[in-house]
Image (cartoon, rainbow, N blue to C red; front, side):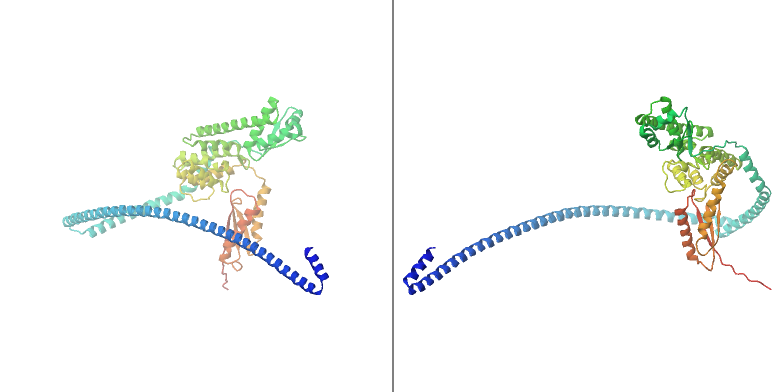
Length: 506
């Protein structure tokens, strides 16, 4: 405002005053701009200094971190150097020990060489004396002795072989039939048929409601504790227990019996009773195993093998009770071994244990014969018994005479009329499915399912499949059977390719 007033005064004064007023305004503007520039310059300098200080601090921090890393690396290198020096000292010490042992061995070897030379000299002297006395050289005496023994042994061997061959031709077939028939006749067993269900009888249908419980809590607790499916339907005075494991079915049956008898049925009581019954069943299994081994006169079995033997009572194979089958096989093996002049105790032991793989606590993807052999090896059974267990279904090669006896007696016990049960239609359908599956591949001419479905033989055309493709075909068929079919044990697939040349002379 002061500048404006001053300008107005200058206008009043006159034109000369106007010029003076303009010069004044310009000067004031220049001074103000210079002051603002000075302030801006100071602000920028301050900002640059602050930025410089920040960068310097950051740089110092990076340098400090790098120095600390370098110090840590140097420390590690020093530790490694110390370890290397220590190891080098150990290696040098070991090297000195090896050199000392080497010198000792060389000294002993030289001593042995000297004694060997002395022995050779004494041998030559004794040989020279014998040659002088007998008038024959060592080679001549040896040749005469060998020729004489050879002629004598050949004559006796031919006579012995002829006698054995004649006797075997006359009596082999008769003796074999006699041994098998006598073994079967001396064994009498009962036929046990097992199903996958057990019927639990009750006095009245009112108990069904108590077993089911409020909103089904009792029956759910019972199924969870036993692992058995409990079917309560309109069947009068009966409850069906369904499970593939006979031990679980027996635990469920006994637990239900105790609960119904006691009258107190609720989830806590159910768990308590099931635990108690399971313990009783385990004790009973061990007792059955001990009683079985005592009855058969088998001693020294491992406690775990005794438990597995007792567990066989609750397992069936094609309707045949497994413990009864094993006892029957053991007695047959002992009888047949005695008839053949072998050790009946070993044969009986192998016969009793041949199917323990079927009741193993763990069920890996192995045939029961191989699993049983491994269990027997684990519990220190003798190698010939382990081999007989593993070879009774030809999974491994037989190494002793006990193995074929166990295999034959197992077949006799299982093939006895009434021993095992299987629906004929299902059996035939499984064999037909095996053959049809293999026949679906191109190049396959004929298929034959043999050995009760344990082996599948596939005949292919020589002009359609070469030798290399037969291996691939065998692998593909085995994989497809494994993926699509259900079968006991294992199935052996044999692919046969042959070339025939036929011509006719007219």
